[in-house]
Image (cartoon, rainbow, N blue to C red; front, side, top):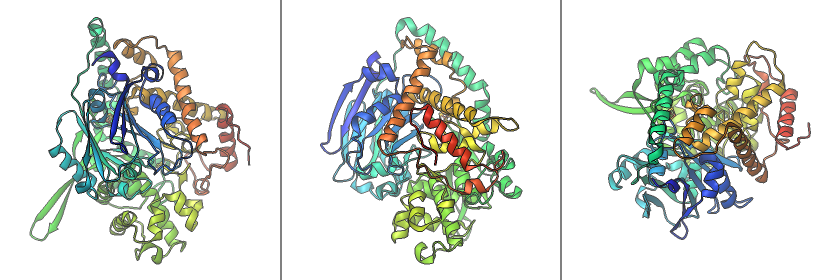
Length: 591
Ligand code: SF4
């Protein structure tokens, strides 16, 4: 690949069916790639106040300078205005997406406008085709992948990013599925694609990466060093052996996990054992796969063998499982069997919804139903009951079918639904985004409230909580630790490195890795400063779109159930938010 290829931005206009390729070294030199470049492009392309489900909302995909060159630099950043929160939408995904985009010759892609008829994009290197997608509109995400694999060229280094029916029906937390087992999961990229009538994006590579002659020896040395560290650190053991679900049992044991809509912070022992990563691996794991160019291989696939007709007729379905999907379908919905979690994960996957949002939403609906806040009239006859896999399967289908106003409201997320029907005290959304599993202490909730994406991956507050167990600490220490982590993660997601390999990519290793491919002049101080700049740029976008620290809703439920640090206090949480606001230059008036 020529040196400047990493700077190329492919602009695609779905309205005009037009493309343009522009060299943007101005962006890539200063912001590296990934999140850094994506937030600048979002600023350029997204007018203030637009409807996220209108043609004006751009979709940006960006990869980084290390993509295709170093181990575990395997992710793509998607950025857009979120239809769920109304502000920053950012989601990361692996599979083959990063490798395909980079080797097709692009550092980023911007998809603008909207098609009048269903369309999919076939990008084969510099050739971009707008193909009729009428025949695959309405088709499940996995099936779309199977069809496009047959009809599009470029097998090998090729990615197929597509939506299911949830995206078409503009469910605000619809995801985009990539290579069957990976997802741009959170914040509604699928709905944005659906609003553009964009069913899929196929990208195949026709280029390779060239390292300058004089750098080859250095590159090999740095590459080997990094590879060695990746395969020898605990990341390999932790994420490869049991996968992310390996932490479920211990998290439940310390009482740091929401169970049945946070009715309690731990599930009964027998359920925790049944839904543990260890049990999934022993009973159901069939194989592991990896994103392109990642030796860790954390993607765990289960085989679910089910009788479909009398007389020993079985079908076997391969279903990916991870920590969050097990929690959202299992712990949140009171499942008793690992197989039932897989059944729900499979349905959510086929429909193309974010599994975390779906689990939190149905958990709220179950509690609201038990309390009489909603009735059978709302649920279209369903008796929402903890652990009832059949009822939840039907409810998930109804969210997409939208047979009545209740399901139309559920399709807009738990923040919206609870505003309409009540039960906000136990509607577990933060900044408009449904919560991840953690109930570990103040840091995980500050992370959910203040993080740019309202995702646990913004600053890993759950991890900070666990490290602080048994120690005396003040909120200043927590706020500073969260900010420091979130700022540094901007560098990782600009390069774009999988967060599971974050311990490998220290500032020194990043600088060596960049130097060895001819990108020089980066220092630890410059990286640190850039992390801060990117984080503030994201926050600026959020505030521009109406986000406010002062009016953040905090569900009462989180103060009613003890964390491993004891009960949380709202006054302390608000003080911490105020402090956070002061540090980032956004003063907040204490209520
Ligand atoms: S650690 Fe897992 S998610 Fe991350 S790049 Fe590797 S295989 Fe993909």
